Length: 105
Image 1 (spheres, helix red, strand yellow):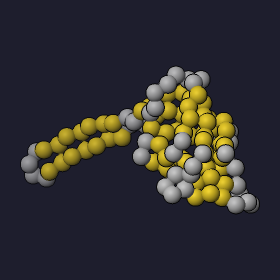
Image 2 (tube, helix red, strand yellow):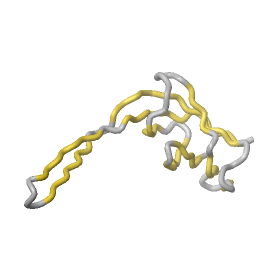
Image 3 (cartoon, helix red, strand yellow):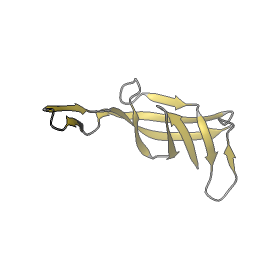
């Protein structure tokens, strides 16, 4: 069984026991998290449900495994012949979660 969830402005296809990295959500490692914005749910060989825009009475339960930071992204700005150069960096904070259960009532 798989589901497509929406969190942090992005969509993720998840399955039971899969690990994914999403934008940071509050919580300590080991805490349970529930996602109720499920856009699609189904199985590989059977029927599936597509939400309008979300599937009613569907729930994805996950466990936070770690809080971490992504790799650094460098931002470099330059204007030629003006002696203008700026360098900045950014590291996105992420949460790694493990999907425990996908339910449809």
